[in-house]
Amino acid sequence: MDVTSPAERWRGLGEAYQVDTRITVLSQEEATIVPDGVLFRKGDDWSVFLVIAGRAELRPVSLMRRSGRLAAVSSGLAVGDRVIVYPSDRVVAGASVAIR
Image 1: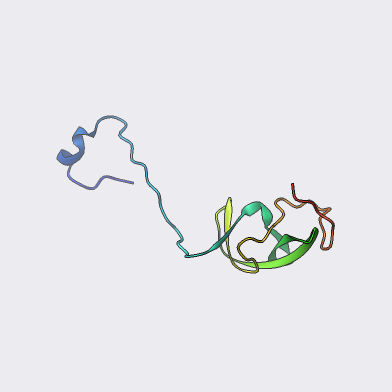
Image 2: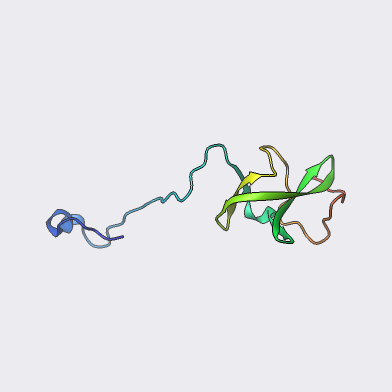
């Protein structure tokens, strides 16, 4: 970021003046957002494990965007779906799981 106005307009700001900003790179109404830790690759596709009736269910998903912390899902999940975060290699489709 750089100040582009004439120096006489900002000279009085002082040493170490700080500007806090928020930059929006994506805005999507009613997006389904999940933690990045629920996602894993199954072949070339992204997938998650849902918890349905105490069992793990493999579900392919399509993504709009990932940030490294969160992901916006465009298809494959609905609001309120319960997903497994950081599933270990012991989680497979049909495995018995408990919510903690």
